[in-house]
Length: 369
Image 1 (cartoon, rainbow, N blue to C red):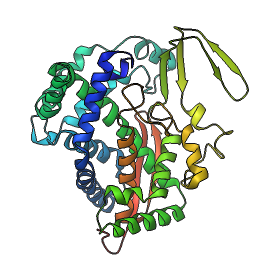
Image 2 (tube, one colour):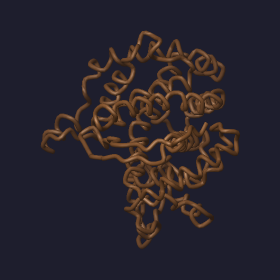
Image 3 (tube, helix red, strand yellow):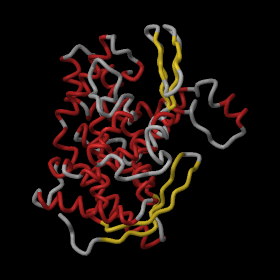
């Protein structure tokens, strides 16, 4: 799996090259598929609010996010295959087997350490779900698998990698990232909603009423909101790695000697909530990265396993989908404020993570596009 390969390994170059080619070949599908999928999410959300007085954003996001990623990457709807509507549940169950060493389900710490954090869960229980997912990827990703063969990867190995990256990295990321954005916006001042709505609608209007990449690039405040959400709640908080050489790591006021072969552990919020770098670091500030001074802070935003100011390449471990993540975050905010002037919501931390319930929405009086 790419996540566990070192950049010095040939396989790392091959798999990451495959991902770059996949993303490049499907780039024109991302925006229309997002609009189609998340428009359906918002329509259903409105019905649930009207009926029940609230709508669980996480539930809708889990369903629609899976569909969006599969359609964007491979052009085949999982619901139209043998997976049917079970894809998100199968993916979530398999994800549990990957992440259980890090999760808490509310048991006493000693029990969780013994039964969740010490030994792997028996993979036999996840195998049926994995096999069903693999069957989908092996048939839906035929073009990507052809590309894989052309760069020296077997179809089977490439398929396992595509499944892992789509489900673990992309889908697992969206399950955390999008509720994080919604939480930040729900708790933000209504004036931020007004500014976002104005910026987004103006940019879309200038592009003929369509959400295009050119329109998205004009939305500076929207981009800042996404960066701030990634800063304050990075989807992957923990990093591990072995030192390849002897090195010295400097902090603001100390220096640490690290020997070759030693294991390093990183907890991102220590860096992304550093009060010496970010004023009011614990607070969501939507326009933190607006303007030239704001952009200077981007080098300290490291959610992608590297500074936001650096590019992902086959020679580093930075997230291959780094730019895509920032794009879909902006698309979520754009779609939200093209439909609504403002919204309210309640958030809570649960065993499964952050949960966002949307309580009310104020729709625009006239469709923006």
